[in-house]
Length: 112
Image (cartoon, rainbow, N blue to C red; front, side, top):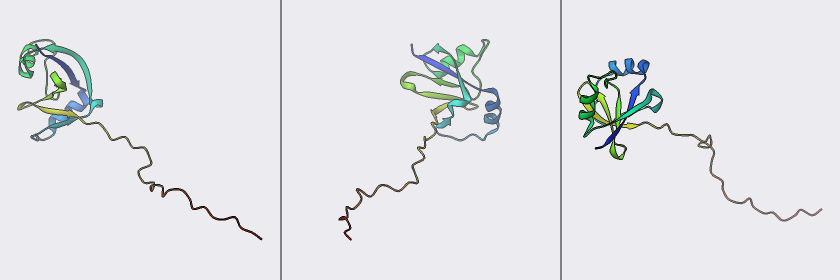
C-alpha cells in the first residue's frame, strides 16, 4: 500500500489560504508555510482523508499529501488537486554583470 507523507499548513497561512478564490489547475505551495507531520499508508489520497477524518488530526483545507513518485495533492473545498512546491529562484548577484569579452589586447611596449 502506498505511503503518503502529511504536510500540515501552518495556521496563520491557512487563514489566508481559506479566503483565496478557488483556482483550477496545479497549486504552487511554499515549503515555509508547511510542516511535515507524519505519514499514512492508504490506497489513494481520498482513502487517507477518510482514515484520518474521525481521528485527532483530520486533514483540513490547505494540507498536502505527498505520495508515490513525490506526487502531491492539496486538500481544497472541492477535493484534492495537484500541487507542486514553489522553490524560489536563487540569485547569484551576477545577473546584471555583462559577460566577459575575452582576453585584453596585448600592446607592444612603449619606447622613449
